[in-house]
Length: 427
Image 1 (cartoon, helix red, strand yellow):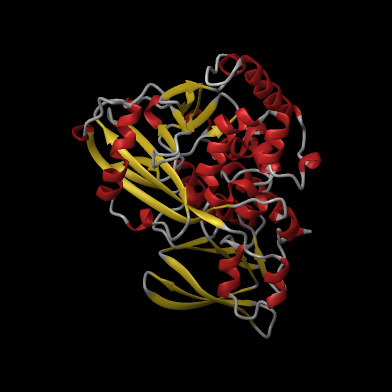
Image 2 (cartoon, helix red, strand yellow):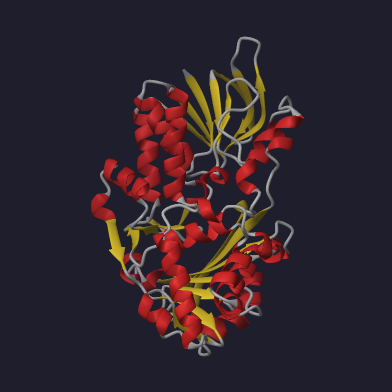
């Protein structure tokens, strides 16, 4: 068959590779000039690639590590156990091990024990079935207590989901705790090399990747195929396929498909989703001693501080000290319209809260990136509205990060979803 695939992220490229391995013809449409999707990278210097949004692997990410092995990149995958903390009451405090929990002084010993037991229960719970229908806020308050919620989990949920913090499904929090490990993996040279290798394998197998390509309409044809109108580097073009797979958010795919019946979106309403934003700083020295700082102070204007070169040595980047300041914000937040300098101006006081010695002269370069529909708001009703791969439009399939529930979005679960989709297509 001739397949059209919209999106060259982890999901789209894995599907494309499996399809060309089975003898199908594949054409991928990718809006960006490089592969990777939300895990896409940019050059911080010639030949030195870094993800636009921070990424790493956990030991539980076996689907991703299997693909890395398949691509011959195992020697580039290094595992670390960096320091991860939470910033609360004006101080970064470890909260990444049982002993760290027991020493977490913002909580009383009694509440530390409640936190430890609640986390242990979620780590040992094999699946979240018993948690379905419950919100994270209510469950945590009942099991771990109000003080634990107010100090640890409430700020996380508010920082990530804003006004929807009280609506977040408990299975989402289960996955966030259950899937994570102290050891973190990173490909030396960046995950860009994984996406470049996937793209190379796809094209070596006869597939085609059209960069700078954006779909504008999807429609069925009288002979049972699917046509896609698109622009490729500004030039209009139409391609006919036997099947089309869209890895865009479901609502975007519906918007591109005028003949999609209204009943489909009624059964699978688009969930509220937030955009992701990262300010990346190239510093001449470290800002902190930590790799990951989850910010629990509401007056600091960023949610996560990820000092990449406190995990991967600065020498891998020519001595640069690379720092992410990450956020999830509503799509209409002014942050997405600010220049990089304006973002840094807004963040500077918060950065100084982490290190009072910080001076703007430490910044050698800065970049900022935003992405819409990066984080769905996963409510207790979310699971009932997730669509399957098939759509009412013959030959059109959807597969996107909204379908990895209850797991959080990420490369590993996108790859797992891709393998499931290919099995479905071949069944």
